[in-house]
View (tube, rainbow over the protein chains, first blue to last red):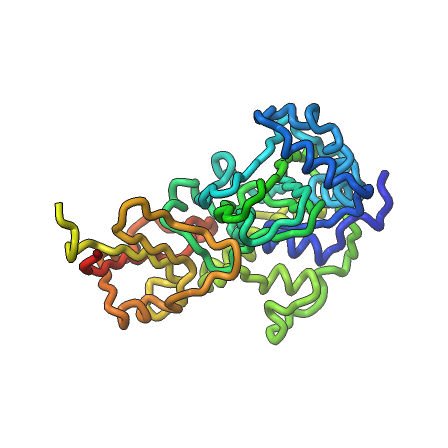
Length: 263
Length: 94
């Protein structure tokens, strides 16, 4: 069991369903990020899935309660750390990487896998940050169909503090900017899987979370789960797309609270 | 070959919120017809040159392909972001 203080709350979960990502800055032991970055700087070959054997300090990130708290909240108590993980080293002078998903899109209403992106040093805009597009996680659009997009409304460069972990929905569109700095940009990508369906919420849930009346005046400024799920529109999509998003989000929410949607 | 003042096709992919040229642009890709040109996702704040497709028309861009609206439509599923307009400018690029 993990202390409830590390679990997400209803607003966090609603925002994840709307935006497709959640960033934490775990309170890691002093010097850990620097040791990881130094080890990565010194590597001359990519060990692939064995990166956690080459840099065993990475397990301290995965086992941090703030990291586990997010994973339990979104994937359940019995989530698993997938054996696949990868070191992404973006060299100085390397260009932008186009929008993609890591596999075929598998859009369903269950949150069954997450990516976790750990950055051992602070990422600035010129270092080739990962760039994500909040709100794209429910789009049934394979990577080929993204090839004519470059800059997209609402895109978020992950210019984050050292030690940050960005959890993203597996199908969230992501790419990178170019690295025009003089330093290597490191990111370790982890994959996490759901092992079983929820029979109850696995975060700090208030059964009244969705019972606030719809507030048409608050819309994107909503601070409660119900209104966030109803009105969040990070891409600024059309009304018809927005209505479809709303239905999909609600089906996801219902599965997460252990109550499958009637549809 | 003397390439000075050769007319070339500049391309602009704009993904608009709706099929209307007056709706807000959600996606922007400019392709310059010069060797080695590469597109670039911004690592910072992207400055949008146009807010709508109509803004680009005002600047002299011409639409060469309108969004395809005959494709199968789903009332429940989502696919790509916005409606794709492809525009061109034929200009002498030195």
